[in-house]
Amino acid sequence: MPHFNLVLIGQNGRLEFEVILFLASLRANSPKFEGRVFIAEPRPNQAWTMNPMIRSQHTRDLIAELGAEFIAFDNKIFGESYPYGNKIECLTAMPNDKPFLFFDSDTLILDELCDVPFDFSRPTASLRRTATWPQPLGPGHHYADIWKDCYDICGVDYTSSLDEQFSAQDWRRYLYFNASFFFYESPTKFGARFLEFAQRIKNSTRPRITRQSLDPWLDQVVLPMVIHSFGGGEDTHLLGDGWTQRPAVIIVGYPFFTPEKMIESSQH
Image: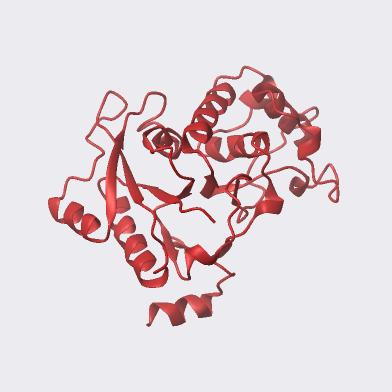
């Protein structure tokens, strides 16, 4: 398996502390990992009312001591109005020489990441999701109609994305991911398509789309089309999402981690 790089979003405030916890768990539990870890920060511009970058020098020094590198990117489409868009736009700043794996900053690594048999040529994302989007809103606004509109807007084949073991009324028939992690062999290609498709959906005037809420769901709405367009899907899922305790962190490990395993690991 090729070496790969990790990328997380870093910002002033809560995220900077989450990044530190992620890095500490990575170094403690994945000693085989030899790739680079990028902490992507949005530069201050008109998309932000305040400087979003990590301003504490002590925090920056600690992050560097834990082996991470800072990279800055410009918000050209999103920003303070939709900070989830950072995970889309940050990929433009990534070096394109190795595959990438994106993690939300509120993630802990509890096992050896390099033992996961990633196939970076076939992307996927977290399957820890529920039926959060779309929300059918009456006649002509069923799951199938709404998702087909999304695929048509993005120019991606819809029929081949369906999981036909589920009925048309079951949300699991349609590709849907949690955007807490995702990966591919090229951050440049994935990022460009992610941004293009996000803008297409965001700017769509189709009634079935405009009647749906895209905040905060836009990134998760777009991911299925991006992943399917690159030949990925749910069958490539490898990382077992662990346990979420709101408002704490998402535990990510391989294989699946129970709350008991999380507590046991945290005590070591």
